[in-house]
Structures are given as C-alpha cells and as structure tokens.
Amino acid sequence: MALKLTRSDLGDLNQFRCIAEAGGFRKAAKELDMNPSALSHAMRGLEERTGVRLFNRTNRSVTLTPAGEDLLKEVQTGFAAIASGLEALNHYRDRPAGHLRLNVPTDAARLVLAPILSNYTRTYPDVRLELVIEDRMVDIVKDGFDAGIRYGDAVPQDMIAIPLGPELNWIMVASPDYLETFGSPEKPSDLQAHRCIGMRMGNGALYHWELERDEEAILLNIDWHLITNETNVIVQLTQTGAGIAYVLEARVKEQLASGQLVQVLPEWSSMGPAFFLYYPSRRQLPEALRALIDMAKNQRK
Image 1: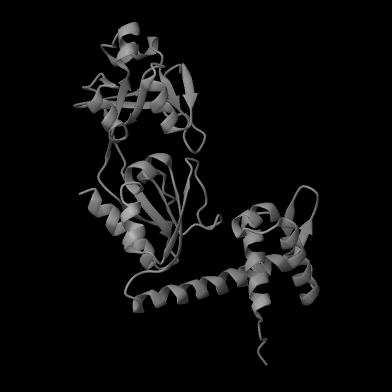
Image 2 (image 1 turned 180 degrees about the vertical axis):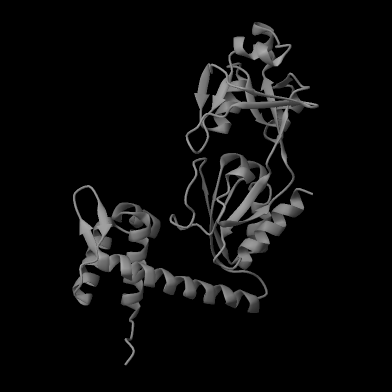
C-alpha cells in the first residue's frame, strides 16, 4: 500500500532539502523566509515521525547522517520531477509563470539585464523574478538558482550555455585630471610607473590585463596601486582620478561620451568572451527563462 503524503510532509521534505543543499539551518531559513528555530523544530518533528535521525548537529555545523544522505537523493529526484511537471504546464498557458531565480555578476546585471527587466516584468507579470548580483562564482544547483550568467570562459563545463551577445571589448581608461597630473602612457610598459587599479575576480584571482594590437599580444602583471573586486567601485574610483582602470568598453560608454573618462593607449585593447546564460543540463529550459533569453538577445542586436 502506497504511503500517503500530507501537505505537512511535503513541506517538511522540501525544507529538509533546502537545509541539506544550503549546508545549515540559518542559510536555509533565509532562503525560505523562516525563523531558524522554527525550521529546526520542523526537522525534529520530521525525525520523530520517521523514527530516523537525519542530521548530525553540533554547535558549529550541521551534516547529514547516512539516512539523511539517502533521503536527500530521493527527495531531490522527487522535487525535480514535480518542478518539471509544473514547468510543463507552461506549454498550455498563453504566457510563462512561476518563480525564476538568477545569479549574475555586476557587469551582466548592468549591461544585459537592466535594459530589459522593466519590459520583461510588464510582458510576463505572472513570473516572479529574483535577481542575485554577485561577482563570486557559485554553484547554481547547490544554491538553488534556475540559471546563471557569466563570461563564456567561466561557465562550468557540465552546463548548457547560451551566448547573450557578441564578444566584449576591454579597454583602459582614466580621468582627464589623472592624465593631466601623471601624464599619458605612450606604450604598455609605461603602465608600470602609473597608478593602476586591479580587479580581483570572482574566483579570488587577480585579473592580469590582456592587451592586443594587430598581431601583438601582451599580458601585463602590474604592481597594483589599488585592488577591489567590484566594477562599479572601479569606475567611480577612476572617474575621481584614482588611477588607470581596465574595464569593458560598454561599461563606460556614457563616461567616454561625456568626457568624464578618456581611453588610455587606444590602439591597445582586448576582445574577450561574451556573456553566457547557463543552466543545468539535466533540466528542461523553463519557459520564463526562454523568454528572458530571447529578450536579452533581441536588445543586443
């Protein structure tokens, strides 16, 4: 005889999955918008009903017992099937619906998504869109995202990746005040004597400037005057004369047009990978995500 699951059972199993995937009660509670103590109480109730201990709890960590690990595999499969079934219903609707959760870096949020989100939310009012902006690399499956956006060379190999536009041009810029004070470099090697602003990437590594001119290619490893991990801060610092920065040309288009920034060594730049949207290969493409991809591609034509 098949076991009949109650609404409470399904809710508790989903909470169990979130705790296991998040690696703890507090992080899962934030994702579920619950009180951590209430979540812990619910899991103790689940353990009492099943008669099996699912978590090893200490003051510093929460890990799964062998029984918990086995349950997690089954629950993940079950909830993936439920999500797939609900997504299939979108084929019978006149427009997509549901919850779409994305993880994107700062530059992609500003250049790819910001120009289209107002139109997207008006066109698809039944989609609840959650946008998490961070430059560090995350596991979108483990952290509960439907998809992510990253530069093409940073997309995990086991994901389906879709380009959202052409390759991106990287240039060097500085403020007119900075160049008036410190002078303009005449060749790449002159940059070693300048105040250059470094970028620490999402994986923790420092980004070395890649410069190209016709068939020449140079990889610069500079003694950085200042280092940060956020593009908006780099642009603001550069506008106030803090130094020379290496940024996406599209990111400073307005500042270049207004004269707030000036391109340094304009004959030297570098084409880099485009932005790619990616999602797990084992799941079908949600209709809400498909609509977002189409809108992003059309606005960049």
